Length: 310
Ligand code: ADP
Ligand code: MG
Image 1 (cartoon, rainbow, N blue to C red):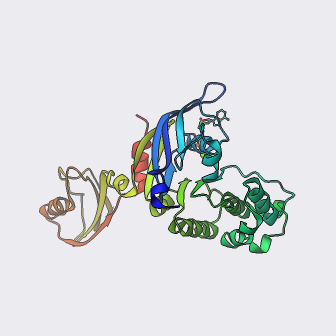
Image 2: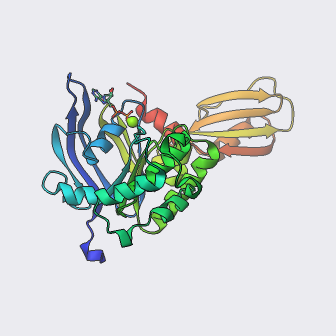
Image 3: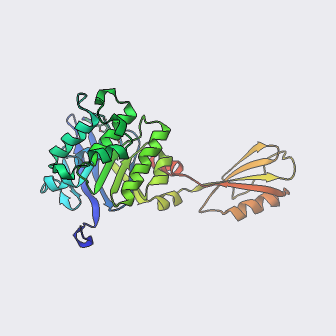
């Protein structure tokens, strides 16, 4: 596909609302634009509406109102092209237990009308480290193996967008890293990745951009770097040259804790003070500083701050 044939955004969601039968409003007019070529993290607490959003894109849940475009194709006006442009790994593992991984991928390729000579089932199984299980029954696979098979299944029609809903839930650390390595590889080849995860550290490391939803509303949609810079609290730990009887106080300290005889942990707010002022205040109290360690705020700080209910 030439560059000009590609849409500006991989996924464009406008005022999407979902009210489930029974009245639960899972999505309250969310709008998101997911740039192509990126790894985009959709984060939010349990029940925020992440899976609902993804399942609407997958055509598994009907929206109540609003619109969504996948690779430029409206999901109502052009459902077939929209579907062909996306591969989805759902949160729930569903399989026909009587097919082998190889058959599962071949069936899926058939479903998408991929001609036999363009199928690459074994290549996909190798990519997710399941080549040895190609002919085993799906019911004999472990949870982690099934999850990886679902990733391969989502890629059989070579979509430009891969969406993974909590792909690493219940997957051990080593396999999780293998999965992320594969996701990075796909992204390097140009596939736009959208993922939801509970592991904020992973999101921070993997994602170019992060959207946070809470109670069915978008509360942040920024580059990972911008999001991290929103954290207000910074922490500096100082070691001083003599035993501290009582922790010093200063207007620029938000919080100060005596960790041991010679160590203080001082929290300050980025927009009110800087590390230089904090250290100067320690010295002004008569202590000489022999060592300094700072901790950068992480996504968890920002996330907790943003999702804390008023
Ligand atoms: P997340 O994936 O962020 O944890 P979900 O999209 O699964 O959140 O759920 C959003 C809200 O919608 C939750 O309150 C959930 O209980 C509700 N919900 C999800 N699926 C259904 C359904 N099929 N019927 C009724 N309510 C649902
Ligand atoms: Mg979910």
